Image 1 (cartoon, rainbow, N blue to C red):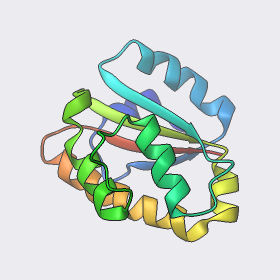
Image 2 (cartoon, rainbow, N blue to C red):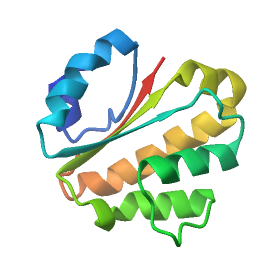
Image 3 (cartoon, rainbow, N blue to C red):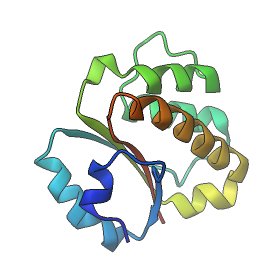
Image 4 (cartoon, rainbow, N blue to C red):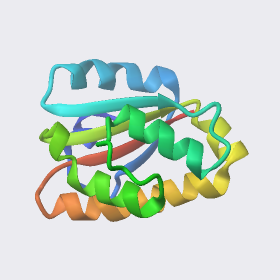
Length: 132
């Protein structure tokens, strides 16, 4: 189970898996915090390109977003268009993503961990929550 205090922390434990009923309290608390939250539905994601589009739309990436893993890394590392004291991305229906596009999901995890390491140097929480 994921807790509000975990989301506020800067930690190598930046990727979480939770059931929908386990995150509602965390989402409510985050609404009243300085942590920016984002969400997208992963039920239709079958490949990298669809994931790029979902992430870009959810996190409101700039128009120059290149639609590839390097561009995802660059935009996640910047976030200047949405400055906050931390960031959390909720991926709903994540079990479908893992079933239909496991490599893509795994690549997202490794990219997220790399970027979270960079944000940790600035003491900024950066979390990815797969809601199963």
